[in-house]
Image (cartoon, rainbow, N blue to C red; front, side, top):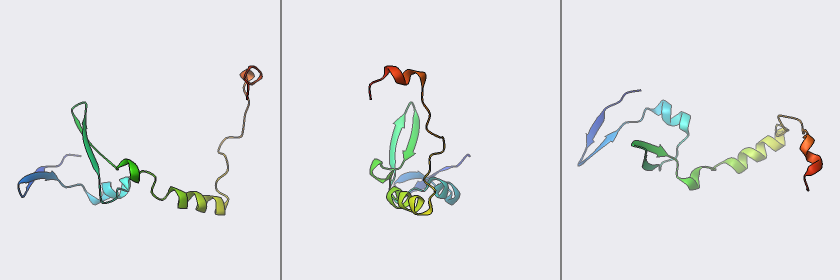
Length: 82
């Protein structure tokens, strides 16, 4: 997606479409840094797990927290100390 850099007062900025913001589920604060010549916009580390506890509780209450793959063993299990 291409977009324009726009003048915003004494600064410049980019408008992020609402559809992208919804998909990313960002809060009101973002972290900016440059990585290998690319501007990276991400959620602050302290916001990455917002809502996880409530989601985990909801999954447990609905019984939707089962393993996706059954437990399995490896031939190496006999050599390992648990």
